[in-house]
Length: 192
Image (tube, rainbow, N blue to C red):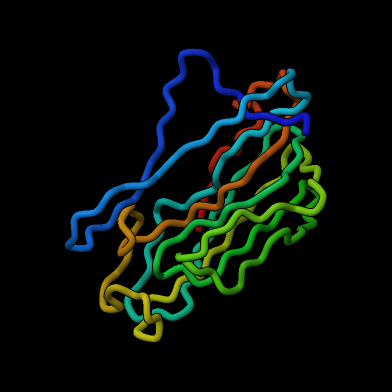
């Protein structure tokens, strides 16, 4: 209640679907539903993601870690997460690293499953002060032990196809309704 996402007039809405050929003709059943706010919202929800598009997952590695970081440039509230990887994704963790150097783990997904991608809502939003870094760590299983692995002999890079990989740590921030999201969207820092 009291929250909404802004869709400016004359906007184009773009939805990206990742399809993987399976050898059979099929019909897409994707749908989109939009509920319009009945009164002006007090807060605006802005989605962003922390990513590492330079990931390289070596062949035969059963527990390969990749990290991405982004810095928050204004005080914001963080309210939900949507971890996204592909078939080699094994686990993901979201951590805040405060300007004081202290850190706090907000979400750990120890058994990531590409077939059960979920949004995780915090019981209570967390205030994230300006200068805080969001660190997203992902672990991948590119070994023969991963029954979903398309080919454990291949080095794996970023890509849209399921046989490629992603480290995309989506997050929903809450800002005042009149704040422009460009002021709070995390900017990528060096990822390792």
